[in-house]
Length: 309
Image (tube, rainbow, N blue to C red; front, side, top):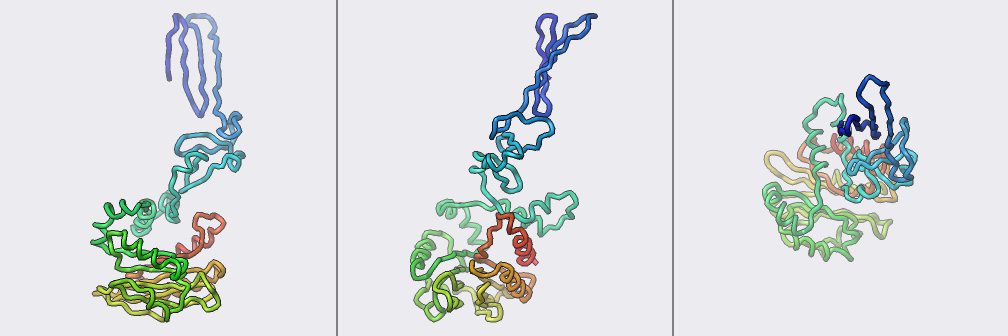
């Protein structure tokens, strides 16, 4: 409360729930005279007052108030489970984290693995080539890492991939690509120095948007895993087994053709995952499912369960 003295009159001003009340009185034995003024919040979209009882959103960054009924008109958006106005949303990086609400729930029983996965997804960052070389290269040299690229056709973009790899200071031991648009017998044309290549042919019925491959550094002893490598109208996969002590490592690329059925894709993905061991598995790929689209919520849940089981 802010108190200001004006001769014999005291003025007290306080704020509560978006309103400001000013109360004045004169000291003495006379009846108290009170005058109150309510300063109401205004909607940042329609500029009308937000009345008591009306539902509204408040921007998590600038605290702008928006009527619930003005939500669509205001072009505001809910990002990472928080509400942002049309201006602040441009400053927020969208993150896909299906574990956020689970971990933050009051009844959640702490699972170290789930918490760790949530933290990793919350801390993902974008890096320029210079930032990548200066910030991450040291750690990657120690822990390895893998690189995935939807190449959109070897014939048109393979040289660009080689150029980008040359710009990176760290040499990834594992490189996965999708949409090669070639058959496996053509793979010898697309070599990378000091890497062994493994290709799964593109779907014969498609001229583009098909074909997956893996490049494994020669320092790793890898062999094709044909049991897990399949091509159907709904899913394309390629897996290699890296003979590593004490246990082998399974590395795979998964690609979902947009023309295929999402339901069938998830069913076939489940069949692949069930054949994999519980540990030492590295999956990468392009699932062609917008994980930020709430209408795809059932696919998001299945994808989360299938790939973390």
